[in-house]
Amino acid sequence: MIEIKDIVTLSDQNEYQVVSIVDYEYRIYYYLVDINEISNVKFLYKNGDKLTEVEDKELVNKLLPMFYEQIKDII
Image (tube, rainbow, N blue to C red; front, side, top):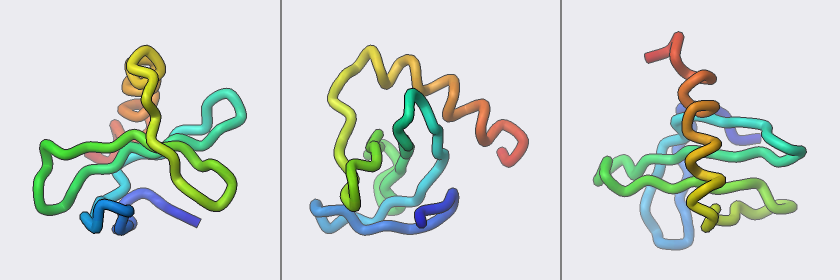
């Protein structure tokens, strides 16, 4: 199970830290930041046993406030 603050290596061979996790419309979404290049961020969702990148910009815009809400007390 992936948790906030975990480090994961994606298929691009970069390591990302899990910044926030949101359960939205029966899907688990992850906000990840590259630990070596903080401008490199990924929004992914759990797809079976894989992580798939969110390509819908409108969905990302909906998720961003939810991601923030999940971590506002941590930061």
